[in-house]
Length: 257
Image 1 (tube, one colour):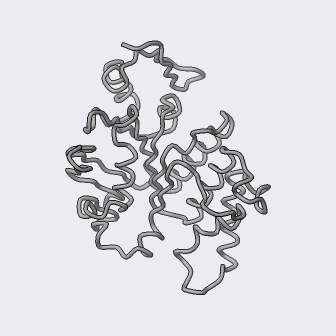
Image 2 (cartoon, rainbow, N blue to C red; image 1 turned 45 degrees about the vertical axis):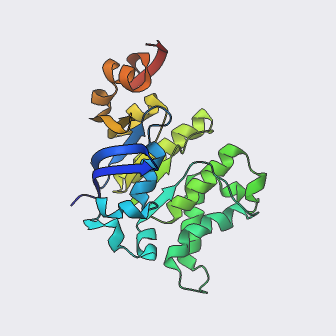
């Protein structure tokens, strides 16, 4: 059984078509990278897969059932969505923000359990934000906030994690740490769909890439298949140097086509 399957998915905003006839799937333990130039519908696709666009829920199957069959709390225990932006509308400590990821498991008026506290401490340690536990989120740098919000998503312990540009704004060391964490999670069975712009990291870490362009999927498959000179020219209008460094893929944009 597929973890997630989208079939003939089309999304319009007014008269504008954002996605047209999109079909792809995610298996348990698969790390899928969504790539493509700005404005090609990557964020819209993530929001649709998360169930945030209700009119399309029947076109997305999760664990064999349409998203529309799930109650909100039930879905929130199995699927986590991390949007880009990392903004909080109120002053809250990092630890309390991460604890919000445990809300789907708590009954009304029930406080956090010992297990909730243990999971929160573990994911904050994994994302290297334990030292900010008592700091309010508005006092942290953009990169620090990004790691705290990632911790909140991981605190759900989801079967499927949808993340939109999770390494944007992070320094190179923390980018690799986050990608290593995703790789570890996928090996444990979690499915991950990640919007990512760094083509080298996408090639190194993702099992599958889906390249979007002009409302449709230009290419999907292994990184080697998708990141071809022809697809890079079509999807990004670039010429790139494609090689290896220490046995790892390296994609360096050179010039516009």
